[in-house]
Image (cartoon, rainbow, N blue to C red; front, side):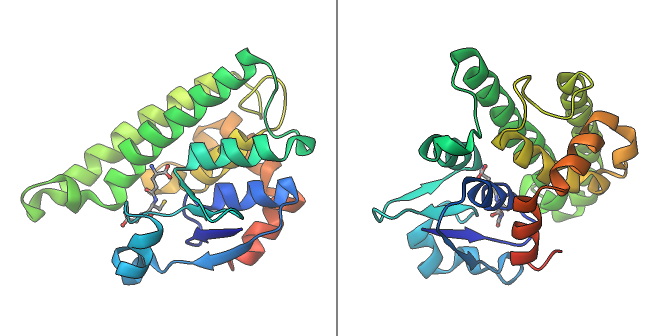
Length: 207
Ligand SMILES: N[C@@H](CCC(=O)N[C@@H](CS)C(=O)NCC(=O)O)C(=O)O
C-alpha cells in the first residue's frame, strides 16, 4: 500500500492509523506548498487534488479521511481500532463526519485558504477572522462531545482519536490554545505518546 500525505496535514491521521494497524505500507509525500496536488500525475491518483489518498494492494485508491480510517480499522480487526457494535460504529461516523465536514473543511480550511471562499481577494483576511471564530465554536462543540473523556468513543481508543489528535495540533491557528479545550488537550497528550503516533510523526519529519 502507499499513503499519499503531506506532513502535519489531515493525512497524518491515516498515517498514524496504518502504524496502529501494523500495516505494510510506504509513504509518498505530496508537496502541497508547491502545488503538487494540482499536477496531472497526482490528479490521476486523486482528482480532488487533496491528501490523503491510499493506494491499496489491489490497485484501487481510497480517498477521504473518514473512509480511509474506517477501512484501515475494519481491514485490520486485530488492532481493535473501531468498536464492533452498531452504536459504537454510528458514534464513530458521527464524530468523523463532524471532524471532516465541519471542523476541518468548514473551519480550518476556511482559515488557511480563505482566498478560495471570497470573490474579492481583499476580503480574505476578514473571511479568515470569521472562520477562526466559527472554528472555535466547532471545537467547543467537540469539547462538549468528549464530555471529559480523553477518547472520542466511550469504548476506548479508536481511529477517531487519531483524527482528533491531528485537529488538536492545529488549534493555535484559531488564536486559541489547547488549554482552552481541556479534554481535547488530554486526548492530544495521550495520543502523542502512542508508539504509532511517534512513528508517523518521525516518518513525516515532525518528531
Ligand atoms: N474531505 C477531505 C479533505 C482533505 C483535505 O482538505 N486535505 C488537505 C490537507 S489537510 C489538502 O490536501 N489540501 C490541499 C488543497 O486544498 O490544495 C478528507 O477528509 O480527506
